[in-house]
Length: 380
View 1 (tube, rainbow, N blue to C red):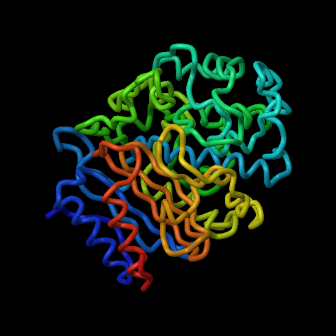
View 2: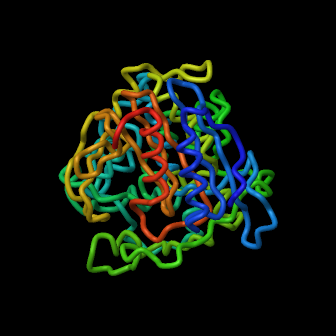
């Protein structure tokens, strides 16, 4: 039996049981789960170990690379700017980033970047993981590139590029890099221990991701498919997350470091209509922008039906997230998750070291989510 640490409201004891069961079944090695309800923390648990040899326990302040759950943090930055009137999701990207208009992209709108419908899910030019650390290089390549399909006609998961695309718009509008804006305008005010571009002083707190035992077939670089073109370069290797280069760079689609508590802390602002932890970041209307549906259909990269709003995936019969319609989410490679139920004012967050072998779906978060709603007396 794993020793589970933290706090859990008695109403949510099923969540604690499900969390412990994931370890007992060998699904987890080190992990954290957090739940907030109507702006208050009701679950904040962690357990297991943070390194390969098991000598370093997962502590309260342990953080880990959560891959694409970082995208929701990037989305929040854009939502804040839009709510302030500084960014228009329906404006051409080139309004803020003139160089982006090259090669037939003058009419692509910011909302297309936010919903994976811009037609720029990967780079045409071969790049390495180390190139991702060079912001100017990778954004300039995207600005010069021709779209792979007409913007707005289909979604195709912008696995890494979305962070650079949205991040450059945020930089042009605010004068700050995405990581700097997030730190000063989101994480800082909320007291959230989440970082996009991690200072080396935090390295001792970072848990080591355990690569999946089998690589998702989608990540196999078959250049004859859209997915293959996306993942052909840079080649993804979870062990890169253990390097200082990866941790210190700003990769707003994939290298955010945090834990379930900090993920929940940020997203509680959305669940609570823009205000949480004594701070208001945006209006209730600004939060509702998320639910402006942009596309609903089979994703060209993931090959599954997805319904995208502004910056988040949305609840749908094909991808059910919970019983309430106004629910949005996104997750990261390996299993991390941020789920926001606006109707219940509920947030569920998960971060872990042991990665599963797919980019979609995770038995651990399915069990945790079911336990949360069962605790509320609601079936899923």
